[in-house]
Length: 325
Image 1 (cartoon, rainbow, N blue to C red):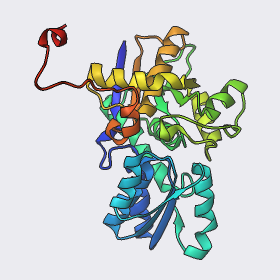
Image 2 (cartoon, rainbow, N blue to C red):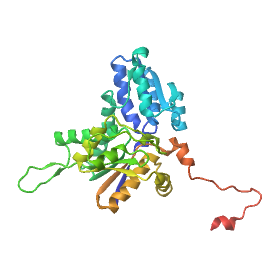
Image 3 (cartoon, rainbow, N blue to C red):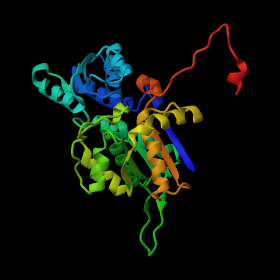
Image 4 (cartoon, helix red, strand yellow):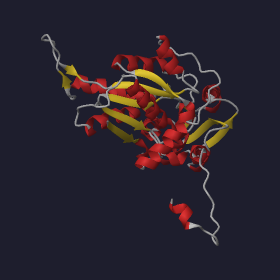
């Protein structure tokens, strides 16, 4: 298999969310915004808080009560006014919208302004440069709000229009055109509105019922840009898939233990989907395939604890023969 892993946990706040927030907060500051607010299911809140602190902006973060503990603490640590809400991320988003007039904040929610998308676009630009402008054949991307996937597809199309990408030769005298990857949008079976809409052949997704997953970033019942995600997936010749929720922890453990890659549970869904795609003949193992790892596993203490039960030793009575086996 020709598989690569894109390590986006190397960003400043340990996840790909830093890409979008770096651009969004910078432009908010440049345009005279003083106060920002956003909902988050995990990493976006901490990234927004960090960049707002650097820019001298006031930041309000609203997150579901069961948001991973590291994300809760991170947003507060970076100086945001962070709140836990008895609801899901779209309900946190409704609070941001409801308080906008009274509080005078700028809504930094997904796709409510243009610059988070432009920041996420750098994933596609960087990938093209790393592959010497000859893009891989397949990309597996964990999809919650989907801004990263939308941004990458925008980047690829713009690079193609500029003539910067390797081209595919076509038969019959047809002019060659840029070669784009097939995009595979990956969700969990516990919250898979995009995958279900794809299977139904629909352009808009129905909200997920009783959404649940250990991968907090995938628990987005209704993505604002659902139609843009599905358009990009279909235009690329890819698919939207859902991994079995019960397998995510196992895939996360395998990646960390076998490869030393700090793989977040969201990206564990990509590994599960990639295996299914190979088994069903949707991709050829020889194709250059990129798995996007969007966050550091260290930010998911709850996921790290799941299925981990460390053995204990009596310091005065250790049978080394037993442990050598």
